Amino acid sequence: MAGHTFCTSEVQTTIPLLREVYDDTMTKVLYVGPDTCSMISKLLIVDEDDYEAWGVEPYDFDSSYFHCWDLIHKGIIRVADVKFDLPYEKNSFSHVIISDTLEYFSSRYLNSTIFELMRVSREGVIIFAGKPLILVSFYRYPKHLEVIRIIQFQNLPDTNLTMRPNSEVLRGGKGI
Image 1 (cartoon, rainbow, N blue to C red):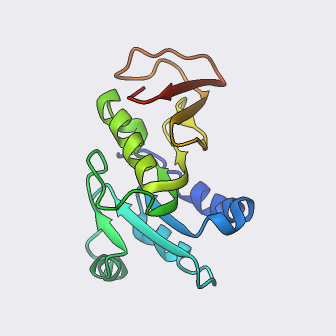
Image 2: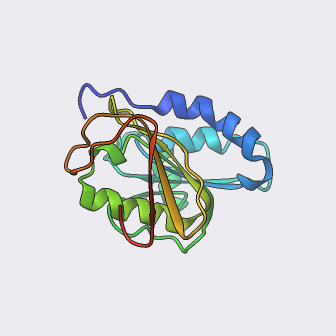
């Protein structure tokens, strides 16, 4: 990941806007991505009793960050490989926000991870991708239909998909 710029600042800027747009429905958020401890600390500052923030750190974190260990011991943050089943029940969160993670997955893990993120989310999954030319926007979906909107791209690595700008991939049932 050396030399890569993460979307952390964009995510932090966007959270208040998303909270304003989704108003009462964005009550329990799962954040998955780099710098999870910092993100969750900022999300937990929200002055509302009915708002919760949880996190999954998919990468190694700086073990010298004491506050991070505190959040891990409280069970608010988990360090986990998001390519496999998440340790949460179906519809555990109103929204899942994932940043700078999916663009590094092969199609095999990308498909299963997106389905797993959708499984734990009631309202939708918000994806921030920092790798140039593969930007994925927020998508809402009925539970039987997955919608992925590719805003800008070129050939997607490890897949045989070549897509036109602003196209959508719609699939019901099994993987993409």
